[in-house]
Length: 173
Image 1: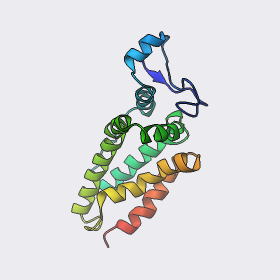
Image 2: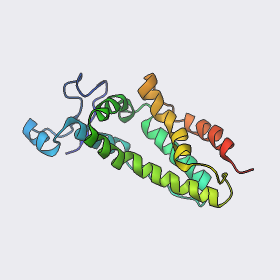
Image 3: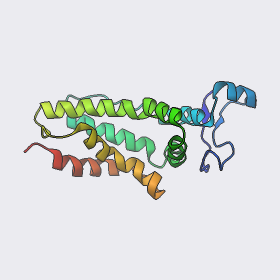
Image 4: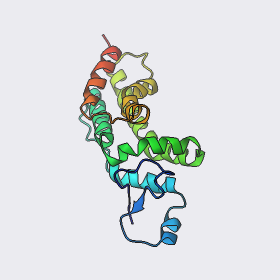
């Protein structure tokens, strides 16, 4: 059974049941599988995001750009992206759910990006004094800031513009 997020739902509590399984199942079955709405939402988001891996080319900046593009594409104007404000509100008050969100979504992206940034530094493509975590925060930040703080999606096309503007300042000269 895979959960789905119906379009037009705006929050865990306001929507009543914002995430429902795609298969017909009784409520007790649903709650045996997902002990909380938050966990069900994480599974639904994972199902919607799909595979976020990229095929590496050996050019760490190209690969970092592609990783950023995939991140934006998966969040831009999608049901998973529209669920982010509600998820952000929910994880603020639920440390267990917050940790699970970070484990499943944040850490894999950061670890991959950190590896690519490290390779770019080693190859002299980025300055050696670049903080990989801060650089990642800056390039991924708009994909989360826009839907959570502004209530609008971060267009997938903006990934390249963000990348170009940020990486330009981080390049080794």
